Each structure stands twice: as C-alpha cells, then as structure tokens.
Length: 215
Image 1 (spheres, helix red, strand yellow):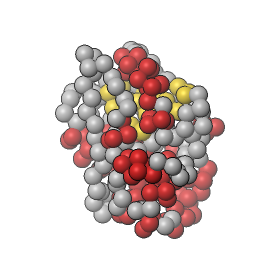
Image 2: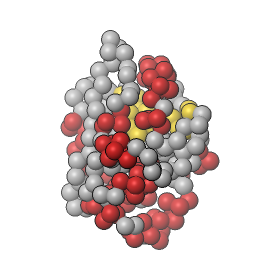
Image 3: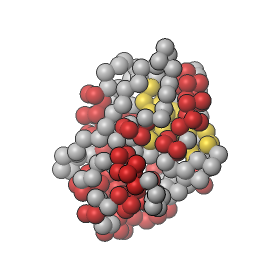
C-alpha cells in the first residue's frame, strides 16, 4: 500500500523473487464523507485476494495496513517510513490534533507537485518533477484533507503483534527519535521505498519469510 497521495508506481523498483512471492499492489480510492480509517480499511481488504497475506504499507499506507490487519488474518505486517502507534507521532502532529491547525493547510493547491511532495514525502522537490508527478497522482482535495486528518488523529495505542517496522535514519516526516524497535536504513529518507529500492530488494525477502517474533 503506497503512502499518502502516492500510487502503486512507487513500488516499481521493488523486485521480489517470483518463485517465492506473488505481489499484489493496492491503490487509494476516494473516501466517502466522514469515513473513518477503520471503515476505509474494511473496504480496502475486499481488494486483497490472497489468504493470510503479508501486508506492506508505506507512510500513511503503513497506518492503513495496520487497520486492515484488524479485519483479516495476516501472516505478517511490514510498515515502512511510518509509525506503529500514536505515541510515535512527532510532536507537531500531536499539536495539530489538539489545535486543528492542519485544517488551515492550503490543500486546495494539490496540483502543485512541489507542495504535494512536501506533504507526502516531507521533502522539497525541485528536480525530476515529472517523476514526482507520476508517483503523486492522487490530487483530490477531499482525499488530502481526509488523509492528513486521519494521520494526526490516529488512535492506535500499542503496536500490533507480528509487525516489522523499517525506518530511514533521516526520515523527516516520522523522525526516528520518536520511534522504538525498528530496522534502520542508514541515510534512508521518507521516500526511501523509491530511492533505496536496492536495499529493499536485498532485505525484504528475508524479512517476509522470517518466522517468530519480528521487530
């Protein structure tokens, strides 16, 4: 599951052995008015066609797959560039929850790719804008408002069992200072699923297949 505003092309660089894995990519749909993240997750699981899957989600998609795992049996949950509970959210997002300041963000400018990249990846993008236009195709103001609101108001208290958390050392959206028990990617940033695909191709197969307790 890709991150906020992103489509599943962010996984184009991920190559898992075809003799071991079947990869099924999911994409965002437009939430109905007032839809909770739990209700959204319940609807999204209808697009999962395999029993006991490994769910992998990036950023806000990482939050979503955790909510999805509450509705279906999963073999494992893998979250990338995300958080495992509301306690790992950065202070600015906690501040936004109580002040509602996030509702003042200029989300009407979603067709501004540089601004959208700032929301989605926490990065200032000045180069390769065409590439980011490809990745960040969900440019609906209702969806962006909903997604930001669901992130800052996420209520999960404790991490789910059988979950592996992969986080970049330099993640600017969800800094590692707030996060515990994770697999660290050195020099990895929030968009590392795109820029560090080689790391994931080397390490994901073993992470997916490992049994027992996960990080």
